[in-house]
Image 1 (cartoon, rainbow, N blue to C red):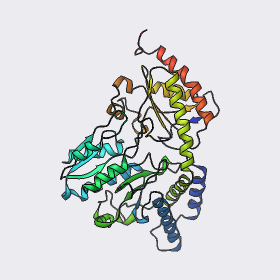
Image 2 (cartoon, one colour):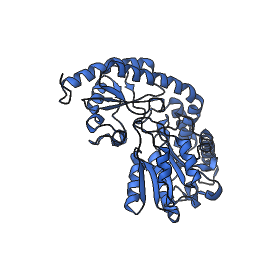
Image 3 (tube, rainbow, N blue to C red):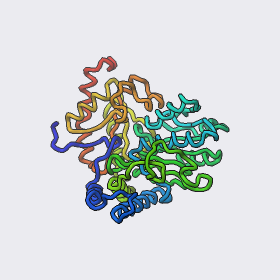
Image 4 (tube, rainbow, N blue to C red):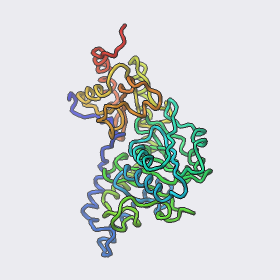
Amino acid sequence: MSKSKYIYLDNAATTPIDPRVIDEINKHFLETYGNSSSLHSIGQKAGQVLLKSREIIASFINANRDDILFTSSGTEADNLAIFGVASKNKERGNHIITSSIEHHAVENPYKELEKNGFELTFLPVDKYGLIDLKDLEDAITSKTLLISIMFANNEIGTIEPIKEIGIIAKKYNVIFHTDAVQAFGKVQIDVNDMNIDLLSASAHKLYGPKGVGLLYIRNKGIREGWGKFIDPIMYGGGHERNMRPSTVNVPGIAGFAKAVEIAKEEMEGESKRQIKLRDKIIKWVTENIEDTYLNGHPTQRLPNNVNLIFKYIEGESIVLDLDMEGIATSTGSACSSDSLEPSHVLLAIGIKTEDAHGSLRISLGRFTSEGDIDYFLKKLPPIIERLRKISPLKKKN
């Protein structure tokens, strides 16, 4: 490593925990160590912290306090939403609609359901990664139980038309779930305005602790009470209203709430700052490095996401060479980075297999400076040039 300060540009994989969140967690490790289900005063104190955290997080997405169920991760929240709704609502139908670019935490549970008699429609996307709303509406049948479309894609950053999807789901009385793990804390989310019934999120994507996630479950009307809407997928004690057994991680949840408080206060300004840096990277790289192009929608994308194709070379080689220069990036989803298969997201938007292997994801964060970006842009071109010189895929002049 040639730089004393390591530049972290892989915030889509996970974010460094904010020092203010660390302080909050440490406080509760020391002061709020009771079991929130206990009747004594120490337990009740933990219960009050849990209640306050639920209120803070619910208000962030315009939800009710009792709509928030805490989990250990976004993946668990996705699994609970998918398997829980499928189990509870079999009599309503066995057809589920999702997209072809979902995170594996959504895609793989649906494939499991497909093995067990459920019918799945995987909607195609356009070259930007957007579903077609007409395709969605045309796919709905009398047996359609659930529509599940991610809020924003974790690899290419494209933001889906969530409000319009919610309108369609409500029109046909179909449950609507969105995996909002990447979007939560980066863009405005209003579960009522967007007609979202289920929403998954994770603390570690917005400078909070790992090991804490949530599932928003709409708790109104015919779906009054979680137990009438969704089945648990774990069994044990009566925590989280009998829906998610396990002693509640109060310090971690308090840290999640603190991360949300910070995001609520800083998100608007931080979004503008990151968009400026994001667009600087896109413009400079596409104008100065040949045979390079952007993946995902040019504007309808997360403020911190840049996903580029560098033709004729392997993205893994770029990542490793940048790492040697003190810069962390990725080729796509960290959850599948050990796979030799090209990204299913890039293939779904029409990228050729040989080009998909040459992708690089740069994801900015709260602690990314313009100086960091300048350093990245300085180090990237010679890496690309060197790798292309030794690449057997490079076109001959």
